[in-house]
Length: 98
Image (cartoon, rainbow, N blue to C red):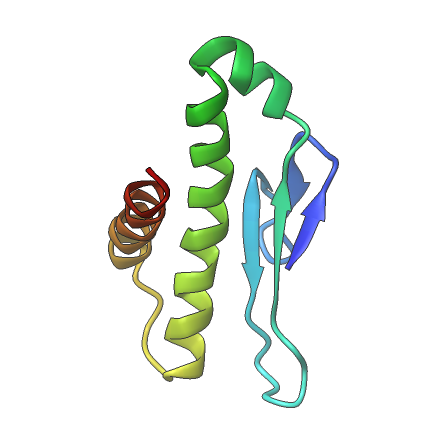
């Protein structure tokens, strides 16, 4: 996982600007990777507060980790599963630390 100091990063396939991305290579010998942009952290803090800003970035990381799990388990990429499961993972983390 690469934590980038950019506001957004460009996807390799569609060249779209996003806050996080997962690269899943076609060649199993090439290592997959995740990139997450974090430069908007200060803006998120001022708009939503520190806890929500941290939650947003952790949720982005967790979302892409779910895609990584889908890849290594040879399953189709499922955006709904990634979004729902990532939120549960981060919520569980917050529950655990309180």
